[in-house]
Length: 163
Image (cartoon, rainbow, N blue to C red; front, side, top):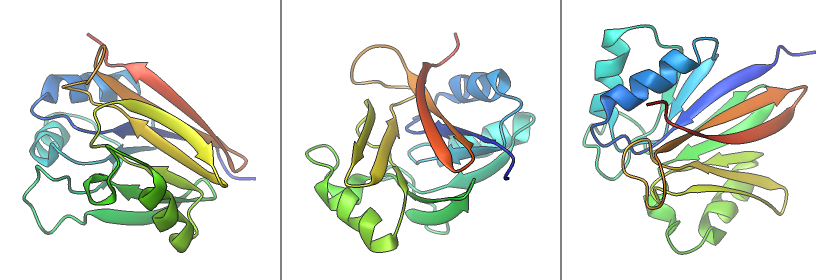
C-alpha cells in the first residue's frame, strides 16, 4: 500500500510571488508542487526564498524558458498524470482535444491551467482538473488546487489563496 500523496497544484501566478509563498506555507506537509505555467520566474524566486517541496513544472504561453517542457507525464501515487498549461489544446473553448491527448498517453489525470478558472470534470475515464489562477482569476478570488491520492484514488480540491 502506497503512502498517501498530497500535491499542491498551481497555475498562472503572473507575478504573485506572495500568493505562491502563502500557498506553500499553508501546506508544508505537501509531497510536491505542480506548477502549470505562466509564472516560472515567480516559481524560481519562491524556491529561493524558503522551503519548497519537490517541484514538477511546465511552461505556459507567457513563460520563455524553453528548457522547461510545455508538457509532462509523471506517475505519482500510482496514477499517471498528464500536465500541460493547456494553451495548445483550446481549453478556453473545449476540453475535447485535451481529453484525446490524455487518452493517447494513457493518463488517469490531466492537470492544466491557462483559463484562470477553477474546473473539475470526470469524463470518459479521465479526471480533468484546473486549479484556477493564484493571481488573476476570471471570477472570484485567486485559487489553487490540492490533489490528494490515497490507495490510487484521487481527490481534487479547490482552495482560495490565503491572504
